[in-house]
Length: 112
Length: 114
Image 1 (cartoon, one colour):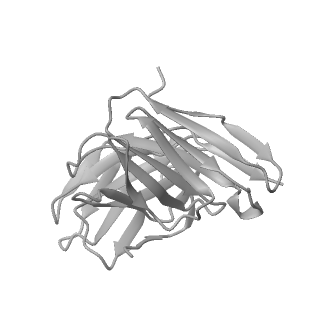
Image 2 (cartoon, rainbow over the protein chains, first blue to last red; image 1 turned 90 degrees about the vertical axis):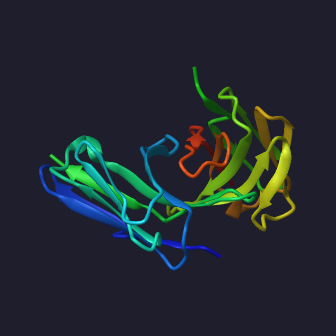
């Protein structure tokens, strides 16, 4: 069974601070995705990283895929209250049994 | 237009009852899923269907029976509901098997078994 461990589980910071969320696995995934989920809604895709060592930027969010394609990180610069939400990493297993396996999530609260 | 829509959004029912949750996607996707999100926000895959055929069944109890009448619909029927079935159930869909394909999720159905 492929497992994804996310840390920290909870994070409460002040507006303007920086933060990093980690996603680690003992398994290699074909690609890794980060989703954000707001209360009462389903997860929404933020980014997909495919190549080992890949770095992608989405405004103040920076995503990195580890060289061995087993881990990833999400860094947010100058957090805003609108960044509050549940951040989920998901590993993609390809082939005929295409499957998205989620980590347990990081609940981020950005306080004004 | 809602891309992936689930009904109902909320469902409160008694133990032992049978209930169904419906899901429809208007994105032309060929693969649909059911996920269960527990009280700790852990999203666990239950089933996946590709072109109406069951692809993944993650050791879900037989009381859960998915049905896909066509590529755009994946319904979930649950028999003899138990307290532990209380959770938020999400339907999701995507197209193809590319490594960067995006999964679209419905808004979820919050099931409470009392």
